[in-house]
Length: 461
Length: 175
Image 1 (cartoon, each protein chain N blue to C red):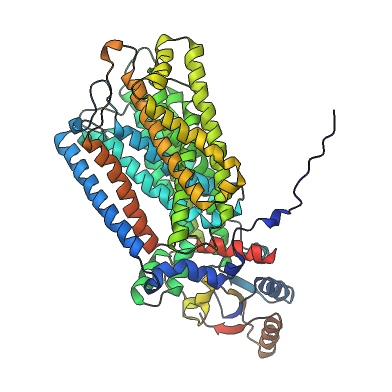
Image 2: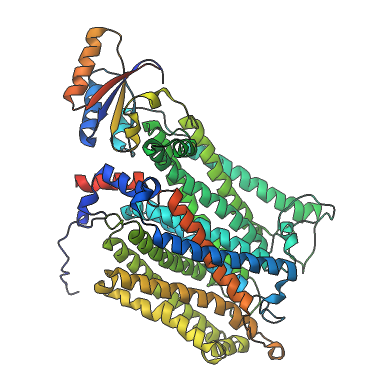
């Protein structure tokens, strides 16, 4: 054995600062975070109104599309008898992936004692709520007869029927339902101390009453904090397995079938990593927007973007390996349909999309190996947007490739999206943006009490 | 909150913890502390009984999971047994997910209920809210509550102790 001396940076652990010195004061933190809620006059809100109008228009388009799907049926989409799942299920998987990440990031980083989560967890969890809510719409509207979706629940009925518990779709229903309700609770519990701060800072009656009622009379007593910390940590411990199981179930929606390219044991973990990947990319986008919109440069620092870029880099490598293992197993398994499917993905009608997806998800994120890229917020933002596009293409292609290129060549068909497919997809983005824009004006976008604690620790060290 | 209190307000976290320590060793009864974020050192000084939240969560989660599995078993193996390709009626591996997901949800709800019971929330009215300056305990001040001694001399001793420890303001509260 040759002893190699590894030169390490002499920087102590405390050298990484997650807040800038000018914000290391409780009142500054409070004022900075509460300002968008109470000092509306000090903001121009122009960008907000522009975003609001655009997202409202897109939301209206989304509602029209959903209305038409419900009244005329799914025939207005490009689905056909071969490609029975089109944009709707791909959008669902994409949204639920983003919806997974907020709680996963928040809870996992809490368990791993990553202090920097303090300034990102609130808007990441809000992202989860809105994305998971939108995700919940798609499986319902993709049903041919959406009015019967409640048949998924077990209730005594005159037909004496029960749900089929062996079906992945039933698992999906319960997993999403549990997850959305759990996420609301997790988010609200973390919000209670901040609502109390808002109650105490409010200068007019209505906000004091509303925030006061929502804060439940929180006084910040030692007993309150002890109970809060116990509950919050326990919820985080439960949240991580719930998130992992939820996206595993989404993977099993595909893997529990008999289709080439879907029936793979790697699907559940591969979907979980994919969810974390696209979710982190979305968090980066929102972090950059919140930082810019509310002038939070002192709380959301370049160091935050640096670590999030590192996580995305790791995830992109895992995704690349997952894709490669799919191709390898397709070839090594020797099944003709599987081999033919891989060839179709690389060279068939959707090949340009497939190459774009590989470029966005695997190749471009390798730029994060360079510190100069990780520390350039515009560059991190741009790559994150590309990752989101890449992940959407991945979900689209998982569905299109397999369904278009099944065992039976006689029924091979392509999926051509209609205008309504695009309106449903873009409209859902508008709905997300709308909910987010409303959220930032009603609730502190950054957790005040956690940042106060972080600031106290950083000022002391 | 029982009895009369003295509320000592601190702007510095270290002084606040030090004051709590000194007050504790000087035979004052520490009643509670109100802080803008959790201060671990204070938890040790105030010996509140241990939280039962996790126990409640465990029981709630396991009970719900058992109920969910029982529903699956009853519906698939007893009430409507349906032979599909010779698969077992009680297909337990496939039945695991629903009890798991709903069990976690109910554990969370049970934990939240236990949290409300332990903290006495919701309680929108509390005499403390009427105390001037208390609103800063949720923002940037650390407030220590000690029992107010009835004897004048004893009370003066406690007030002096808190003031010398760096209290910015000391106020009496009648519940």
